[in-house]
Image (cartoon, rainbow, N blue to C red; front, top):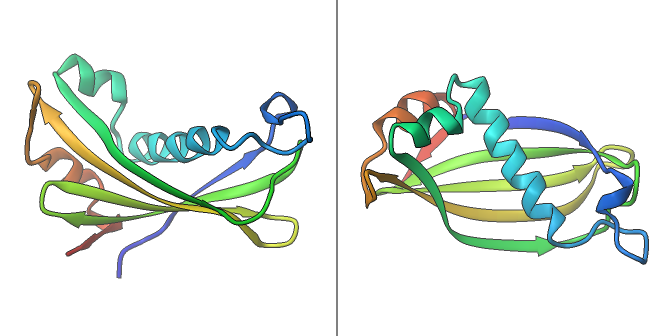
Length: 135
């Protein structure tokens, strides 16, 4: 069974809209920050990859908004990884910690470009081995 990575975060007031809730676009930042934290925990830095002409690229995003986050709310962003061919599907959730309510969930599809072409990302397979569900 593959592991789930968790990243604990807190809403900053400037991320909220005029109604006092987190703007919908900010959830993309939370999801991305969590994927980047996972990469760094597994010994990979994005700038090192791009310097080597290896670029993970978001191909598709599907987010379902379930509940709200407000300023100063603490939450956990979780990620599980599914591998299908050359694609990684990052299944992500944002859960408010005060009441354990699911605020958003997403499937974010990522492919890897090596020297500008979609390629088999062996370095990601190795780094994420404990987190990948193979399909």
